[in-house]
Image (cartoon, rainbow, N blue to C red):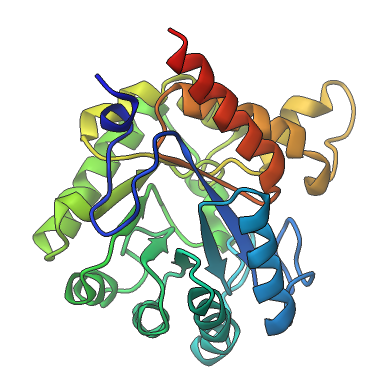
Length: 285
């Protein structure tokens, strides 16, 4: 089986011969990782272009923090933050993903040039999302999700996290396909850090291969998340988010080795190196 076939392809997006790198542009003042650094439209566009220079294959633009405990931004503000950045990056030839739970934002971002809709709720937060994506005919990321950020930690209860995530993702995929989105355009995401404790995230990373039963390409978004802080803390305090990039790159190598279609990261260069090394090792087998 070729590496490309093992990772899968997504209709409507480029094909890469290795795990792709999705760079993150947070156009927010309150992201857990880099809130406020790229809040200005011009700075956000420049940052996205810099990520491409550093090795990102596509850039994910989001205007609403989904960190645990975050409150929602209103629709008009999210549109104001996101659409100009998407338009600016797309005009430069960047493959752009829009990270949103709102159908209106997805629609306007696609009109501005976004090629992919990345909805952390998998279409559950806004009933209009699935019909909007179906009508636009763009790829759609379906993430495992159990509720909004304000209360997600209360939903982090599992008997068998891998089996339950697979079952819940399958049900969500079926609903999205029934809503008109082509199966060939779906990407799945196990939702690391969303309604999950560190042990749940680690178990999912250890069993990414089990998600292959869903038959769709896999996006892994571990960058700078709490479980990495927990791993690195040992007996001490977790390092701040921006000191977790080496650990993120390690996860990227693990995910690439387990045939993830893409990894979503804030700091691109180390992960771009990691996935290329993983590809070179595969090629030597």
